Image (cartoon, rainbow, N blue to C red):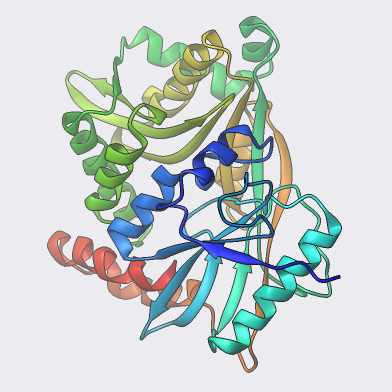
Length: 347
């Protein structure tokens, strides 16, 4: 007998946050704080597909955002700008019915595609049959003693740079204030400029800060009162996620970034955090992959998958690659404006 599949808005149904808090595979990307920031900043409409009836206790669900763009088309993504977002459906029967409902939605709403970004759940290949992109993800086990964790860092780079930062007496601040956000964003703009990729708008970070509150921490390293490196992390239960990092290239020799990672590891381990999620890396970004490897973290593969409504066209990521030569010559005001306009369309 076929199951009935229901849909609801997780920002309006209190069952969702309670479910996310207790589900073992849920992450900060499932939370209403993250979903609310996506909605406020980009207008993406969140929706959950579930086999649990309304007003019953929620036992399963897959969360998506509806993205409607005149530039890149209409689709559903689970979830935009999220490193991973596991479908929280355990029963094979429930998965089959939910995925069947998604296929009907694809055709009924004339969507370009539906994309999911699982971290650990193995999906039926006959449904999400096309891999659209792959990434590496690194995770560091924080359960061993701090001394053991530090010994696993690569001696010639990570350990040495942390010691250099300590000798230089880099200043250190952490929190989620507007002042720290402004310091972070100035460095973020510098970093995006180096890579010819426009920054996400500061409103995105303000909304994250407002809605995630104590789950979000900005850490800033300074040299002689000058901010030189910053990281933004997100916490959920026993996991800390490194989401954004930025720096001033003129001060890379001072070891600001390794110093900030080490400070974060020390602080969250003390309060019982078990895993440091270093986030995803493009498979072609060998420098970033090597940097994360040097912390002694375990590397695994992320594979995003889509079901398409044929025919499908060039992916949204190609838009940024094609525009990089243009971004390189834009003044700061137009550079940040490009990000404010562009990210709404690429999800």
